[in-house]
Length: 359
Image (cartoon, rainbow, N blue to C red; front, side, top):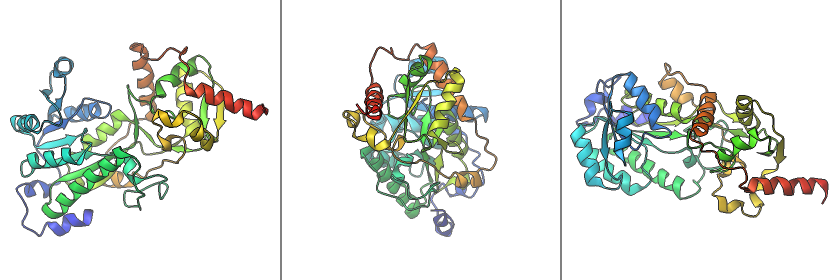
């Protein structure tokens, strides 16, 4: 994608061409669609530290405005193009970050609203568009892709193709950011989508923890807050126009080591039960849980060399910060579930132990 940028500079450029020629945009009116959430709260803090003027288009703005009175809030639905367009124009948005675009129709609407009116758009996509198993480890943005699995990833891929076509044909100033799994106050990657909330109380109660495979499978989990800071670093920077970046922590981590981040923080040492991924996958009821296959079946490891090259000044925060935040915030809100609730992990462990014992 980068080669298109230099080739297109010789064409007659649209009104945002003066921005593209600058190393760093001096404009500071940043409009976020969605949030503040797992990722965008980090973006907001990063930009506020750099004196940006920030607006957020979201639902239920009253409570959020009380917590963050220094941010402009616009209330509305992402699918209401009229209210979204009015908010963008009223704020005078120059830079836009879209964190909640999930369909091609939503992308087309935003393109029509912003074309010729903004200097930079950052679309937040997903690493799931790379397809699993990954064709290379660690996976680079330029490596061969496998077909995306599932409606969510396919929709994101369609949006990416739409925007990059607009970049290639019109120099529409877009960048693609692809977060990996991101831990935050309301989401903790732990085998299945909704199991993170159960992991901490199970560990504290010294209940056995299910570990897929031999524990050496690779995960690539970022702290959502830090991923948001990466987005804040990208938006408004000339180096990012027409490019795509994987957004996560710089290193992947083995599943065993990921669990150890929690056990060390909690000062516990529960039993770890290692169970082959193919057994987990075929266990009755697993498919009904909306499993994330790459959390237990495939390796996840991504190269962040492209981001490091374009933004050598960026400094990452430790993943452990995200683990601590998840534990502290959910304990404070009494959000961890009652351990009397049986989850499928208990049944998988029990049946696997029976199998090992020859029952």
